[in-house]
Image 1: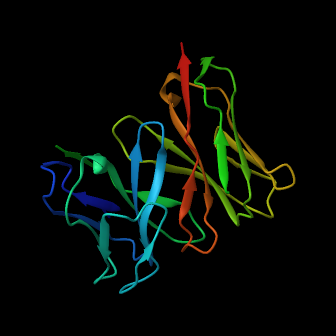
Image 2: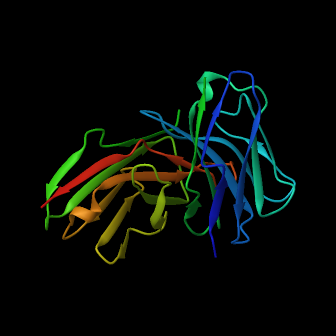
Amino acid sequence: NAGVTQTPKFRVLKTGQSMTLLCAQDMNHEYMYWYRQDPGMGLRLIHYSVGEGTTAKGEVPDGYNVSRLKKQNFLLGLESAAPSQTSVYFCASRDPDRGGYFGPGTRLTVL
Amino acid sequence: SQKIEQNSEALNIQEGKTATLTCNYTNYSPAYLQWYRQDPGRGPVFLLLIRENEKEKRKERLKVTFDTTLKQSLFHITASQPADSATYLCALDGEGSGYALNFGKGTSLLVTP
C-alpha cells in the first residue's frame, strides 16, 4: 500500500515549457486534490476531482489544467510555465469522513 | 471572506511540557476540522479529525477541542518531545468544493530538551 505517490520529485523548466505532474493513489478514494505551497502563503487549492472523469477549479486554477481519466490517477498540467509557478506541488486524496493523504511533493522551478 | 488563522509566531517549549496551538476561523460552517503535521521537505501528515458535533478528541498524547460557537480549535500535545518539533496545520472542509481542505498557514513548534 503505497498511499499517494507523485512523479517527478523535482523539475526545472524554462519559461514557456510545458509539463505534466502525475499523482497516483491506491486507496480507492473518490476525492483527489492538487495544492501548491509557497513560503508565507500556506497550501492553496489549485484543482480538485470528486470522481473519475470529473474536475473542478479551486482557489488558484489559472495556468493549470487537470485530468482524471482513471480513478487512481490525477494529472496536473502546465501548458506554458511561468516563473510565478515556481512552487512545491502536493497531491492529496481523501475519504470524506477521514483525513487526507498527501504525496511527498514535487518541487518545481521555472526559470 | 473565509479565513483560518493560526499562531503566526513560532512556539518554543521545553521537553515534557504541554504545547497548545490555536486555530481560529471566520465565515465557515465546517463539517470537519483537521490537524496535520508537516516536516521540512515533506507532505502534510494527518493527525486528527474532529466533527462539528464533537467537542473533544484524543489520540495518544494529542488532544483536539472544537468550539463552533467561538469558531476555535485548540490542539494540545502533552509530554512534548523534541521529535514533536514540526509545523502544525489546521484545516477545514471547504464548503461546496468536494470536501477540499482549506489550510491555515501553520504554527511552527520547537521542543527543546
